[in-house]
Length: 624
Ligand code: ADP
Image 1 (cartoon, rainbow, N blue to C red):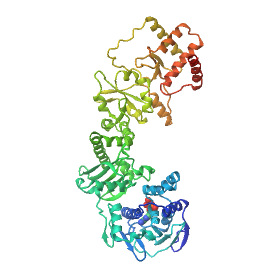
Image 2: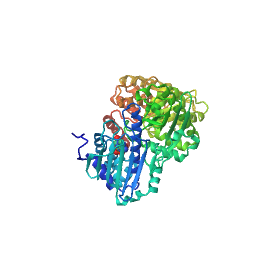
Image 3: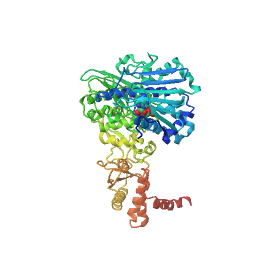
Image 4: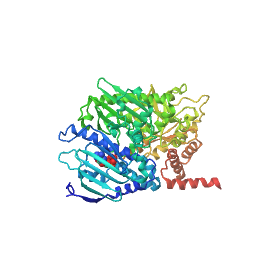
């Protein structure tokens, strides 16, 4: 029986653990002292866990005030970290310490495989690898633990980190865990009290349980969010943020909201607006820490998604409420009125803060927007109650914005020349594709700006955001575009003969393309290009169809509308051919070519083979 507590046994680590250990032992990572943060954090979690479980399980054994004690023994060359937390049973030790449960370690290994051993030090710094990091400074590690569960027996785990570990019965009486490190020769600086104090302050200052060395508390401990907002310094916030999201020590939030409310419900919260994707975003949904929920300073759960709407999922922080029950579960959270009130407040305050950043710290806001704008924009169609506010926060590229610069909708409106009634936009895969689209020609000519919507999410945004501050949003890719007349331009007088020919062409094309095209008409929106495709007013639009198809949604593509430029020499020429020799094969081919060109304007090639052959044939005379 593996679980027989009286038995001593030797076991091998799993292959992944061996890899991690090998890495730890041989790594040249310069901040080796982070191992202490990892041990303290495990101890702190163990204290949280036992306190939390005690709320519902009355038979758990706890002894003494919760605390984390560090001890150094210079003579023996050992450093130990003890807690009186939940402890582990023998089976739990095997599961937790002998195998890899942490997604952090798994992610580290994956990255290591991708980037090679050379990047190990840097990756260790980024990932933080828990208990195993002890082997950076120790050549033997012992863990003695007694589970707080009734009837548990103490067990000692021990290993030199090279492949195997032993388990044997222990003598511990008080539930909890002690990890003892036999320090390597070159890590003996850690036997110094001042050095330990410095490391604890640097990495674990806000751990809420007392961290003691010889009975003296080293950490500050007070929960940051309970202090008066104006009394918490930027530096304290930076460190706290780092604790929340992990990652490198230079990880710094862009801004924060520190809220303390008493009515209608009491709660305190700190929400950080990240500068770049929080480190834990690398992890899967389950392991990601996200927002943390506390009740009366007791940690309840991580990734408390209910605290924020999905479109703010990049925010990190804590919420602590005295009004929630301590045994609150995830299911309860989902329909709890206190939680919805808290969520509303958090949304309101963070959007206000984002608005402030947008107006007062534009460069920072642009960086933020480039990282998180696509997520925030989801809110425009998901949350009707915040639509206006979110639309106001959105930034877009336009024909006029230089690369890396953006325009908000109100800035676009403010710059509209007299006579422009609507907000013009075009959606597409890239700025490059859009500025070169035939659809913008006439607007460029008239000096009108066009918003270039290049994120797939924009398609959803414009489905619901049909108006902004009283102006309609108008897609250039849809029919029915009416542009202000060009100043000083008199339309080219067209002979009735040419008009007749064009009408003939329209009729001819309607018939020829009836399976592909729902309508063929003359267009005012083209300058250079002979033709283009647009969608009918009520249709989803071609890009939206593409996006939905890629998401495996069933969509029946609507047939586009073909618009012809009546001033194009090519169009007029083809019209003459149709009038003169409608039956000739080359006439039909030229018409096909017109349709191909319309697709080409969208960056699409409808029928590559025949088009290539035909173009080659047509070009030949030009090079003779
Ligand atoms: P992580 O803490 O990120 O899960 P670790 O490798 O540091 O990864 O620890 C693995 C597991 O071992 C922890 O999740 C926890 O279940 C258990 N553990 C580690 N230290 C302690 C401790 N002091 N008390 C109780 N359990 C612990």
